[in-house]
Image 1: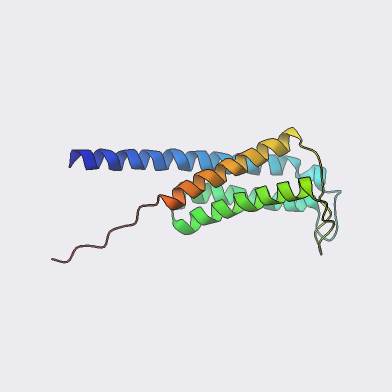
Image 2: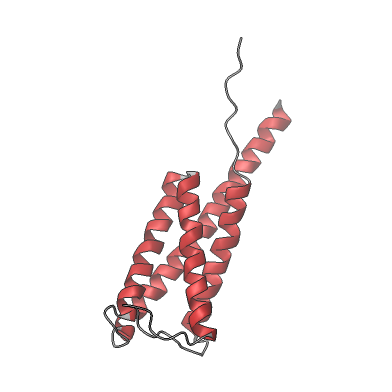
Length: 146
């Protein structure tokens, strides 16, 4: 019984540490995008790249709250999706000049700035940690019939 309790406590600590790492990754991503948004307002179609940076910052900030306080598979999937979509976008626009798409501006930027590297790393770490949390989530056992 004590060994099972120890494994359960160790599992909770691992889950907590993973959530703190994921929240930190999302917070770094949010901070970088919020900080850089005004510099990208000039890249514009119907929507500016700065507006998209603000949206990313807001979505990542919400992800921090969800990961730390909701602890539900839907919230975990949301955080994973925010990080994955952000990483996809940074890699796409780093390596491919796809041009403007509808209201979105041409966001091609074929260089790795320090902020872009940090943001990409934080998103990748968040994806890995959120994948771990989603795959290791303990399911509640139904109550046993007497």
